[in-house]
Structures are given as C-alpha cells and as structure tokens.
Amino acid sequence: MKPNPPTRSQMKRAMSVTLLLATMGWACGEAPDPPTQEAPPVPPGVSGRAPTTAQGLPSVVTLHPSPGRPADMPPEETIMDQLGLAFMPTQLLVRVGQPVVFTNSESLAHNVHVAFIDTDSTIFLADMDPNERTQIVLDAEGGYDVTCDVHPGMRAFIYVTTAPHATFADPDGGFSIPDVPPGSYIASVWSASMDLRGQRTVQVSGPSTVLDLSILQ
Image 1 (cartoon, rainbow, N blue to C red):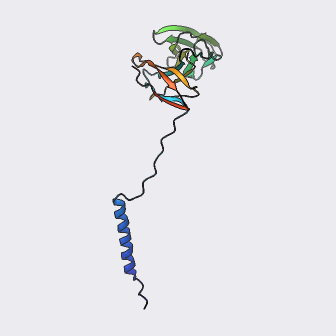
Image 2 (image 1 turned 180 degrees about the horizontal axis):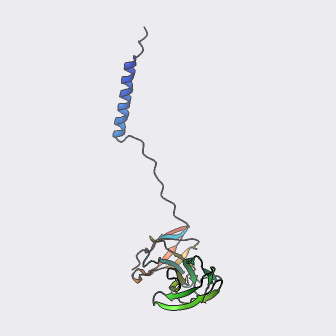
Image 3 (image 1 turned 90 degrees about the vertical axis):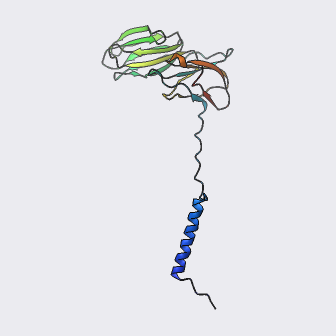
C-alpha cells in the first residue's frame, strides 16, 4: 500500500522548519565568512611616511648614497613658468648646480623673488616682461620660497639637493621614490618646521622598501 502524499499544510510546515533551522544556524555564527580584502600592494622603490605639511610647505625626503658611492651629475636645465597668475609647477625639485629657467608665458608683467627659507634672505629678484626668460643657479641645499611682488597670490616652492633621489611628501606625509638601486643610503627629511628635520642611515633592498621617517629626532 502506497503512502499518502503530503498535504499542502504539511509541506508548508516542513518549509517553515527548514527556514527556522537555517536562521538558527546563521545566528550561531555558521553563516559563510565574508570575502577578505587583500592589503594594497606596496609600490616599488622606497615609500613610507614623513612629517605632514608644515607652514603650508610639504616635507622633502632625500636619499644620499652612503660615503664612497658617487652620485650622478645633475640633469639639464629645468623650467618654472608664469601663466594664469600662477607659477607652474608650484613645486620643483632641483639638483645643486642645475640651472633653473624662469619664463613668463602670459601678457602680464611679473617679477621673480626667490628667498632662502632658513634665513629669509633674498637670493634673486628680477622683473619679468611677457615672453622674457631668465636663468639662475642655486648652490645651497635647502628650501626656497618663490613669489611675485606684483601679484602677492603667486607662490611656489623650490627644494635644492645634492641627492640623486628625492621627492615631495603628500600633505599627510606619504611619499614614494621609484627606481632606487639597492644599497645603503642616508635618508634625510626637510620640513619648514626645523623640529621635524632629521636623518638616518637606511638599507634599501628588494623591489620595495618601506620607511617610517615621520619622527627622526
């Protein structure tokens, strides 16, 4: 004798029990784990943390080869233009002895006022007519403030270094320097706040090296 097929009410009760058991299993932590998020890859080269922006200027991270390793020669001239009532670029890394050419690509007259930040002393001051260009060479390592006395809102920052590897840090202190060969380096940090400056010897190895240079005192 064949058993009677389940009635509709019996089927509903069975489904209710199944859902209840599944819910109880989730409540007891038996639900599948959410997919894990992988950590972002470390960029190649040297990266890490430096002091945050101070007095409106970014920190600068430089890597000098340890004594006995010659640095390469500085590259050719670099250009800072004046266009749209602004210096372009607003931040410029320069090697000691590398010529800096200032140009004026708009129809307004400007001037270029370069001051060494640590002493607040004027290094260069010249008027710039439209389409004019002038060249200077900055021989002292450090930060330079660039302004236009005709248009006070115009400001730029030049950092001069003997290091073959250098970069401006982000406002929050993050930095990255690509293409640094393995070896021993002196890592230096420049900041507009002298209390945040410092240096230490570091070892660069492998495709990626992470450094915490936020506190060097």
